[in-house]
Length: 118
Image 1: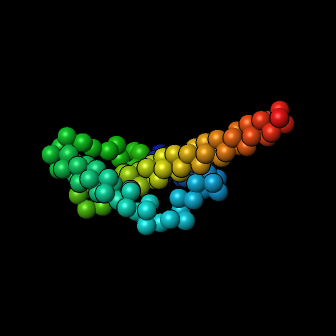
Image 2: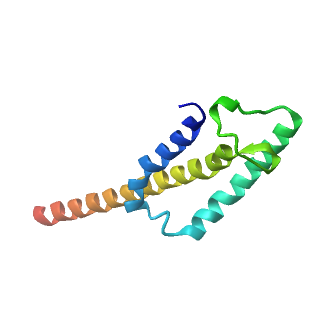
């Protein structure tokens, strides 16, 4: 695989979490997603650029495509800072929504039981 490994892993993360969108509705609220992901991504991209410039951080050329953004940041790194938080938000929202649904079902079940006991 070589230079495509990082991109393949990021793509797999998107594909694995994509079905969560059916319940989470993260992609249907793009402004919320951007407001959540963008500030953190920018912060870490600046941090990476500074670390690369100082020689404290580098990326193995065998595992990246070689496409670099300003500051010497590999495109894979920029994608990482967008894709991984988005997948985390999708997972969180799906769990939150499912938990709320299960709580409503339990409440309904308990109401039915208490009515039947009367």
